Length: 230
Ligand SMILES: O=C(O)[C@H](O)[C@@H](O)[C@H](O)[C@H](O)COP(=O)(O)O
Image 1 (cartoon, rainbow, N blue to C red):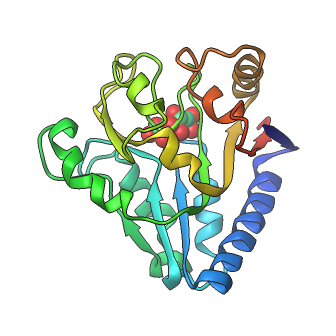
Image 2: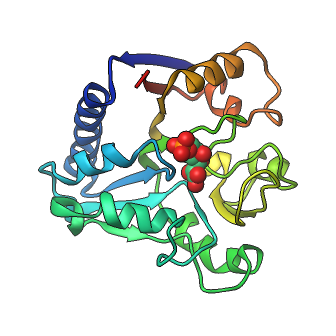
């Protein structure tokens, strides 16, 4: 199931989105003493991260992790971890705990065993913010990859190594079941090209062709789409 919220611009979108996230994280801290926020990399969330870094919250009780990362150390420009550290984990949010999806091994496939226990040990997430590529990938669940069936499987491990054929770098990605294990799931989209991809994802059902469908059309998941044209 999905619910679409449209905003006039990213300023309005990010203000509303940041308020929603703060409410969710605050409630988690009040009820359970801790909050778990899963974010995505890429270009779309950068302004949201900067806005979020400035809000008042008991950030020392918040754990932040990525839905996926490229198999790069955090000194590399294309590392999502580098992006999160430079934008979200700043200002007030610098007190948050961050869990990395990276291990210092040459291949994501050999590093997966080291990363897995960090993620499988975590409780139900409070909020997951997904992005979406124009091929319908989300996190690093790429339709072009040999690992897509494994990543979408019901019994999939919490994380898996992925080698996309249409995008650079090996990746470490949370799996479908680990990402679905969240009280709130958001899909963050900016630009009419992403809206067209969303409409295509809703129109048909083949999840291997467009992995985002596994979230948008999941019978038990409620996905809140946060969208603006510009
Ligand atoms: O590491 C990544 O690239 C992501 O986490 C990926 O899933 C991203 O969210 C989409 O590709 C959208 O990326 P943009 O926001 O750059 O369009």
